[in-house]
Image 1 (cartoon, rainbow, N blue to C red):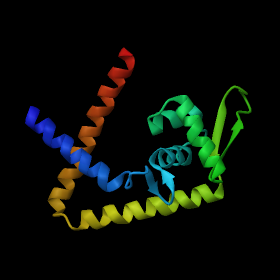
Image 2 (cartoon, helix red, strand yellow; image 1 turned 90 degrees about the horizontal axis):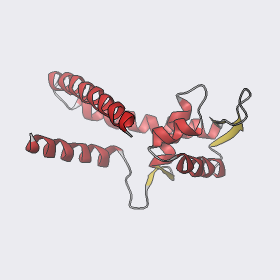
Image 3 (cartoon, helix red, strand yellow; image 1 turned 30 degrees about the horizontal axis):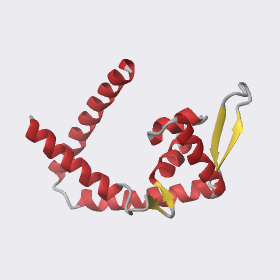
Image 4 (cartoon, rainbow, N blue to C red; image 1 turned 60 degrees about the vertical axis):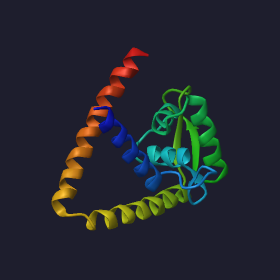
Length: 150
């Protein structure tokens, strides 16, 4: 099992390299960090997105999420406003430039992934999809257990 875990860790590292941060400066794409990308994506996929949602998506603290959103605001990609029902809650929304940037980045990523999937044998592609789905479900269950313990 140790060798399988080591091999899987190596494969995950390769996937992170191919689809994650590409420079030593921490830039993801189009001059935003990977954390900023995760934050933009979190905002896009939620009707109401709080700092806590962004912190969870970007795997940072709440103060880290605040710094990320401040950078996104400085770049004109997002803005924050107080929740109408609860003024203590800060909600983040994307600007039109933020939506456009995120769509371009996701289109580039999807094109890259589609190219790789087309190059695979169809049966292996199906096995990959099933296996990754099962692995992510297991990871979600374990993360939930770990969160309850802390």
